[in-house]
Structure formats: structure tokens, C-alpha cells
Length: 206
Image 1: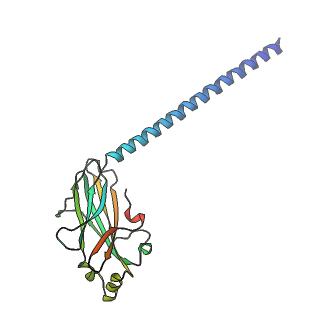
Image 2: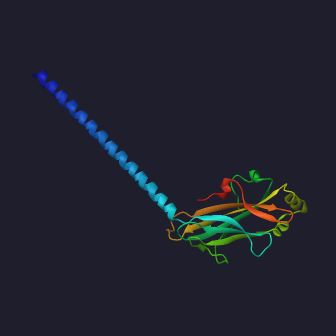
Image 3: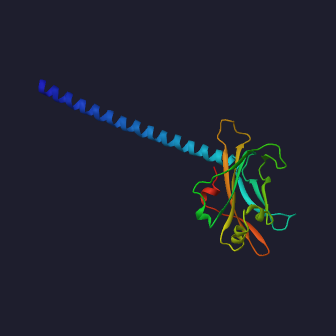
């Protein structure tokens, strides 16, 4: 009788352990599904925030008033207003863009303040952040020899910079966004050009 009772007890214990194991697996599946749902909700929230935020993009437009002149324009392509808090700029000469520093180096950085250009851009609004023309080139070349190399395309002139901005409707503890830009000045015999160029790091967005 004792053996039979012991055997029955063992069977009951094994059955109970199996039930516990099934319940544990079920709870693990529920927890995993909850974690997946939470991750999906977080990704959706991040996507919605990115969709609703301002996005400042850079383009180059010919000047309407200056022959062979150009305006580097910043435009808010996002869905909320942006406040420009700082700008940075650099000008350098290089054989081509592969000779630029791997990470952009800026010598001139300014905190945005009162200026002819607005520091708040509503969606769709643009502002000129840099003006450049053919007549500026000689003054930027420290020697006639360098200017000759620019004329002969033996060396290139690059202008690059960044715009630091915040979402006007976001809290101040949110990190600022940055839009980097880089342009190559093309010196022609009669006409000149200014085009977006440079490695990806020089045209990055955050």
C-alpha cells in the first residue's frame, strides 16, 4: 500500500510540475508579447515625433540681384516651426572632396540673434544663411597662384557649415537638431556655379 501510495504521489507531483511548467511558458509568452508591444509603441511614438518635428534642409539658389551670385538657403520642410539657435561655417581649399577632413571642422560659429534673416522658420519658410559670388573668390585666395589653380580646376573651393535648431513647440530639455551642408564653388571662364557636394558627414541631419 505504501508503495502504491508513493507511486500515486509521484504521478501527482509530476503532473503538477508539468502544469507549472506550462503556466510558466504561458507567462513568458505573455511577457514577451507585452515587451514586443511596448517596443512597437515606442517606435510608433518616435516615428510620430519625427514626422511632426521641423526638418531644415539646405539648397542653393542663384542670386536675383548679383551676377554669378548665389544664396545658400535653409528651408523648414517639417510640420512644426523651428528656431535657429546657432550657425557655423568654414571655407577650405582641397584637390577634391576626398581630401576634406573626415569630420567637419568649423572655425566660425555664431549664436543666432537679431539679423535680417528670421531665426524662426514656420513650415515652408526659407531664409538665406550664406551669400557668395564670383567676385569673392580672389579675396579668399591668399595668392594669385592659388586663384590660378581654382581657375584651372587643379584645386577646389569648398564652403561648408551647419545650422543648429530646436523645435519651437518642444520642451527645452529636448536635444537640438543639426543640419550640415557643404558646397563646391565651380569657377567657369564666364559663369560660375555653387552646388551641393562633399562627403555624407558634411551633409548630415539629426
